Structures are given as structure tokens and as C-alpha cells.
Image (cartoon, rainbow, N blue to C red; front, side):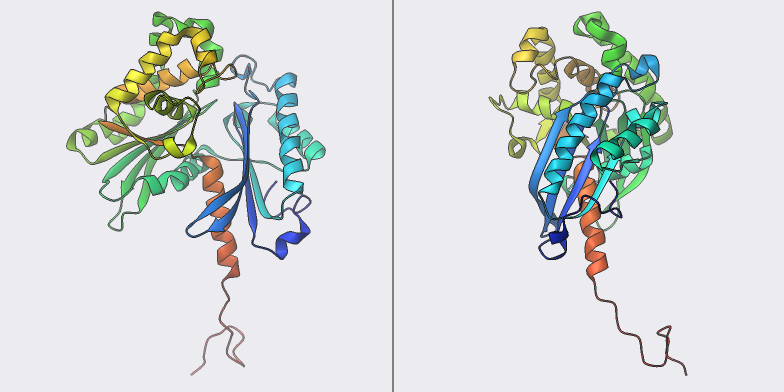
Length: 353
């Protein structure tokens, strides 16, 4: 549902500290975040995340399957119910790669609106990259000359090449959305991704897709000169962080903003590969719902760090929802700024001489 539509917006929203909500329907996950402005950011009021596997089988059929659509709508109905209980002033709901690619996405999103009241916008790959930058910019910090952000999703992987200006503000220099993510790789390689040859084939496939971006931007050369920060946001990088920290239960505060050495990250990757399917399913940072997607994500991570061997990677447990929320809060603050009164007798506010 876009910020301009109001069927699910609570009447009390006009009379209290405003809540804002962001919904992200991805290829693998359905996520929602409700937040209230606090300082330069926001405090989380409510959150929701469920694996729905919307893009399951999409690589082969070109369509969203009936079972996948049913799973997504069930999750979105839960989100709609939660929104009804909150004084939400503005809401934006976005869909990404699965709905960009599927030939039946328009019919699916019409059904979503009929059954849940939620209206979704299918965003472009460029807006997806910009939202990743919005959410992760606070983690770049001073002293960074350039940064390469990557978001390993279900149906696509976004890369954002960033230059820091003289005020230490990030500027987007280039981006690419590769039509490969953890779901698409899992669909293509299946169980072969669990053995050494299959894993290597996934890595080589992704490296080949990354090379044109490297040829345009020469990121490897920039890394050799120093001052380039590598920042990853996805379940893959947060899982690697959990392995490095030996977490018995996943903890966002422990992971978000953590700086991993390249050696530590690749060591954790090898630990995950050595666990096998049963070990991954039983691990507290993975679990049975994600067991088929962890190694495809690791293959994408290894391809990125192979081509761009920065000495460290910053881990971000944040993404599109956080970027959407910050945009909604900024827009609301802008609307709330009083406009100067016009001079009497000069309707356009221009004093006549």
C-alpha cells in the first residue's frame, strides 16, 4: 500500500507521535517494519519477517506458482492485521525481483490488494540500490574514500559503487542488479550445491556475471589503492557473522555494524560448507527454513570477495525496510515544516518595487 492510500491507516495517527510502516515483499522473504521517529533515525515499534519463497520455481516457469502466491498472501494478511492495530500515519509497500520478472505479477498484486487491502509498487533495480544505500550509509563512517555495497537477495544481487564526497556523504557512482540470488541459484543447482564441484560451479557462474561491473568501474584497482570499504547486507553476511561470533542464538545488536576480516568471513564460510544439510538445519543461525539457501548465498559472497578482495567486510543487518522508513520519516518532517507567510497584496510572495 502506498503512502497516499489510507484504507488501512488508523484514524488516531493524526493525533499521536506518528508511526510509519515499510513492507518489503522479496523473492524469498516477506518483511515489515513499523517505526516511530527518534533523533536522526527511528525506534522499532513492530517487525515481521517470514520466509514465503515467492520466487520458488520462477527460474524455470517464468511465473509465480499458486502455492507461492498463497504463502505470500497468508503472510501479508498477518501484516495487514498488525497494521490495523497501530496508529500508522504513512505506509509504503514494495515488491522486488520476483514481481519484476514474473509474467503474472500484475494479477498476483491485484489479488493481494483485494484480499489484504495492501497496495504494492514494483520498484526498479535502481531504486532498490538507492534504498540499500540509504539504509547502510550510517555504517560507512568517516575516513572512507569509496565503498562497495552488496545485497544478496532471493532473486537478485544488488551492487552499489559509492564515492564519499567532501562532506563524507555517500554518492552513488554506479549500480547493477544481477538476476541471480539465493533462490535462483538453489533452483538451478539444487542439491549439487552441497558438493565441492557444484559449489565451485555456482561461484564461477556469479564471477562471470560480476566481471562487466568490474570492467566498467575498476573496483579492484581502487581496493589496491586503499580506502575502499566492502559492506554486505543480507541473510548470508549476517549468518557468517553469527558463525564468527559463535552465537548460540542470533542477535541483531551483536551483528549489525560488525567488521569482519576477510579471512574470518571466509573461514566461517568454510565452516558452513562443512556442516552438510543436517548440520545447517540444526544450527541456530540457519535452521531448516533456510538450509537450501545458505550455500548459494555463500557462493555469491565468495565470488564477490574473490573478485574484490578487500581486507574487511562490514556486516549490515538492515536493508530495504530501513531505507523506506527513513524516506517516509523525512517526507513527513518536510511536510510538517511551517511555510513562511506571504506578504499582503503579493499573492506570489514576491515584493514589488
